[in-house]
Length: 300
Image (cartoon, rainbow, N blue to C red; front, side):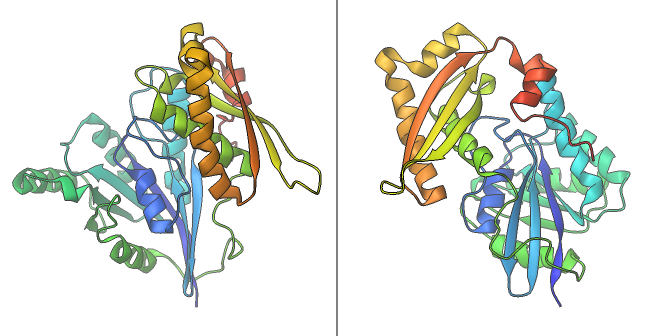
C-alpha cells in the first residue's frame, strides 16, 4: 500500500529549507541564495517512488516582518502547520537559539501534528558541545517526534531522512499524477528563476525590493519552435532600477543570460527572454500590488 501525505518544511530565514527540498526531490525546484528571505511563497514539491508520494511544502523563512510582504510571508509559513501530516522544523547547526524559535515552538505545542527537528549544515559545525547544548534546549521546549542531523548542501543523511519521513505518513492515495513535480504554474517557476539571478548579481537592499512578473509567454511559428518569454523586474526606487539595468544595460543582460540557462533546463525548449525593469514605489506595503505580484493569502 502506498504511503502518502503532506510535509511542511518550516524554519527561520536562511537555514537551508529550499536547498533541503531540492536535495530531497533530487532536482532543482525552488530557488536558493545566500540572501535571507529568498522564498516568498509556499511551494509544493512532489516526491514519488515505488511505495510513496511525499508532498513537501517549502515555506518562507520566519523573520520579524518590516513590511506587508514580510507579514504575508510569516502568515503563509505558519498557516501550513495545521494542514499537514508532518512538520519538519529546520534549524542551522552553526547558530544558537533565538526568539523566533520560541514563536515556532509555541505554535507547535498547540498542534497534534507530529513534528521532527532537522539540524542542517552539520558539515560546517566546529563546536559539537555548543550544538548539543542548543539541540537539548530545543528538545526541552518541545517534545519532537525525532531529531535528525543532515547537510542539505552535500546530501549527507538526506536519503535516510527521506526513509524516516515515510514512517510518519499514513497509507493513502497518490494526490498528484506520478509525472508531476510541483503544482506551481509554469509562469511562477520562470519568474522565480529570474528573481534568483537578481539575488545572485545584486547586493544590499536591492534583492529584497524585487518582484518578477511574467507578462506573456507565446510560441513562435511552428518552424522555429522558439518560446518567447516577456518579463518585468519590479523595484521600489529609481536608483534600484539603475542598478538592475547597469551601465549600458550590462547588468540586465547578465541577469537575462543567467536566467535563460535555468529556464532552458526547466522547459527543455529554445527560448527568447525579453526583460524590462519598472518602478512601483513601496510595493511591498501595498495590498493591491502584493496581490498583483502573487503574494495573496490563500482563502482556504
